[in-house]
Amino acid sequence: MMPIPNEKLGLIAGNGKFPFLVLDAARAQGFEVVVAAIKEEAFPEISEHGASSIHWLSLGELSKLIETFQREGVHRAVMAGQVKHKQIFSSIRPDWRLAKLLLSLTTRNTDSLLGAVAKVLADEGITLEKSTWLLEPLLAKPGILTERAPSEQERKNIDYGRAVARNLAQHDIGQTVVIADSACVAVEAMEGTDATIERAGQIMHSLHGDASTLSRALTVVKIAKPNQDMRFDVPVIGIKTVEAMQAARATCLAVDSGKCLLLDGQKVIDAANAAAIAIIADEGK
Picture 1: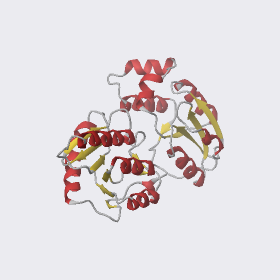
Picture 2 (picture 1 turned 120 degrees about the horizontal axis):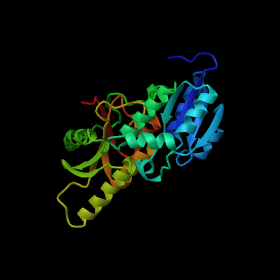
Picture 3 (picture 1 turned 135 degrees about the vertical axis):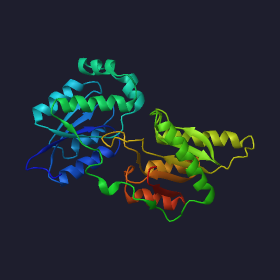
C-alpha cells in the first residue's frame, strides 16, 4: 500500500524504540508523518526525529487526538510503542469521549480498550493500520534464529510453555511465561516481559537457596494472542530482553514467527549468540 504524493500518516507514539522505527520507515517510503506523542510514555527525542509535525497529548485525550489528526489531514495512522498497562488503567485522566468509551466496555483489558479506540478513530475517518505494516523485515522468521539450537530440555520447556501461554493469552492476562524443567516459574501480567523475566530470576535464586530440584536454567516463551490484532500490543523483543535473560540466567527464548517484532533486528540475534542464548521462532498454533 504505497503512499500517494504528500500523503500524511499519523503516528501515535508510546515509549521505546518502536515509534522511531516506524517514523524512519514511513519517511523512507514517502509519507509525511504527523506524530501524536503520548506525554506519559514517548521519549522526548521523538521531537527531533524528522516528523513533519509533532503534538504532545496526554493518555486520556482521545478527542484532542482525533481533532489533531483531522486538522492535519490524516486519514491513516499507526500505533507504535508500549503504553504500560498500569498506566492505561490507573494514571489515565479520560476526557469526555474516552470516559464514555470506558463506561461502554464490558471487559476492561487492553485489547478491549484499544479495539474500541480503533473503532472510534474509524468512525471519524481515520483508519488504524497494522503497527508492523512498514516493518515486515523485522518480524521473526520461522526456524532457529541463533547459532545454538534449543536443547532437548529447552524444547520440552517450550512445548509446555506454549500450552500454558496460549491458555492465558485467551484471557488477555499476558503473552510471556518463564519455565524451568516443565514447571511455570513466572507469568506476565501488567508488568511487561522484561520485568517478568527479572522476577523469574529472583524466584529461582530464592529457590536455589533452599536446594531446589529445578534446573537453574530458564526458558522464556513469548506468544501472540489468539487472533492477535496486529494494530496494537504486538509482541516485541529487543536487546534489553536478551540482557534481562542474561541477568536471570535464562538460556532459551521461543517466539511466534511472523508475529513477533525484533526491535533491534540482527543485533538481537548477535546479542543472544554472544550470551549463548537459543532463540527459536515457530508458527503460532
